[in-house]
Amino acid sequence: MNRREFLKNIACFGAGAILAPELLTKHMAEAAWSASSGLSGVAIKETHLSFRSLENRTRTDAIIVHHIGNTNADVSAATVHQWHLANGWAGIGYHFLIRKDGTIEQGRPMGTIGAHCYGENNHTVGINLVGNFMTAQPETAQMRSAARLIAAVCRFYGMQPGKNTIFGHRDFNATACPGDNLYARLPELIEASREFYF
Image 1 (cartoon, rainbow, N blue to C red):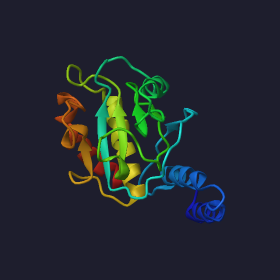
Image 2: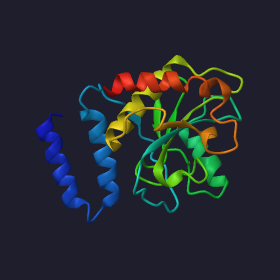
Image 3: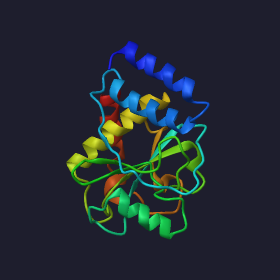
Image 4: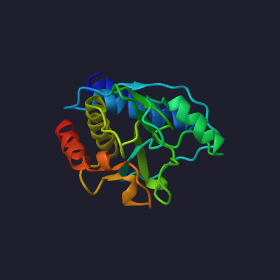
């Protein structure tokens, strides 16, 4: 998609925003991922999850990184969605889930308020790398996908990847998340995302 097509799509989506604002957010996010200059694109696997009531997020200034924690199995977004529904939540609390092979799966719609970090959900995007990183290491493919995704999300929201925009869950709440092994690699993840961003 070239710049002219991108702007035309945004204008068309804007005209439809009054009728369907949730579609505007979804389509604008997809357009940003495919059209960002300097970024070859981020493939997001659509999951078609059904949610209970969700609220739109009006401000986004940070990304919070998580791990599954209770298992090192390669669980899917659909599995986590079922776990979170069982908790009485609207559905999966994370906006994205990154599988061990690097596949990025859609969780909660990106423009909605998540349920992933108490007290910080109304201004953050939640990204979960599957695994228990208290005992295991994240896979190279996961780290590469996370860096690309962080760069794309930062670009979309006009943030620069850095220590003031990318956090681990434990930076805000009393939790081991995202695990000692992933938390220790957050500076590396931030640096890699900056390479994709610029």
